[in-house]
Length: 208
Image 1 (cartoon, helix red, strand yellow):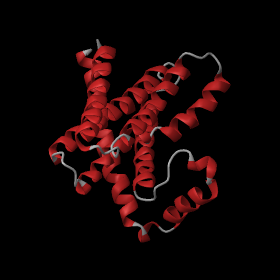
Image 2 (tube, helix red, strand yellow):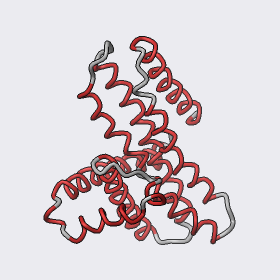
Image 3 (spheres, helix red, strand yellow):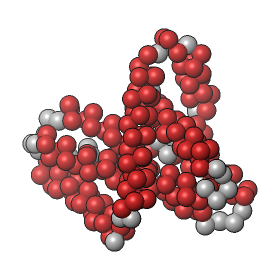
């Protein structure tokens, strides 16, 4: 049932993009499809981790998972593009379109973390797992900041590692000079944490 609902949600999101292209002749928003694909990667990796029997493979996959994880909640910030709405489509249509992709992206985000939480609880104490989850959520929030404001993406850590690391170190070494960095990280981090607690509660008690 859950897989069918997700399929319908993705189909609905893609249909919204196609309809917009048809009426506006603009190919601007298809970038959301690429963003949604990037958001799906952590979910794939989390499933690969739980289905492999190699500790070495898990050790390799976990950093990759963490690197791509911010791509899922990043879609929420695509709502920024609403201020550039100058097409024939209503701004409310574009809000519906972006929000649909963002909701699916957040599902991928939380489900990926949820899968690994259930997997590692057999090896790690629950308090430690929750501590690691909180750290992961705030790291993802920081990753969203790097993507939206500094325009870095997950691939840049391979293509331009020196520049990415330099930007990160500047903000950690001079935190008071970069208040927006920490306000965005704190704000989105708390939002992600609240959302995950609600998602976790839903899965644990409602069995949906």
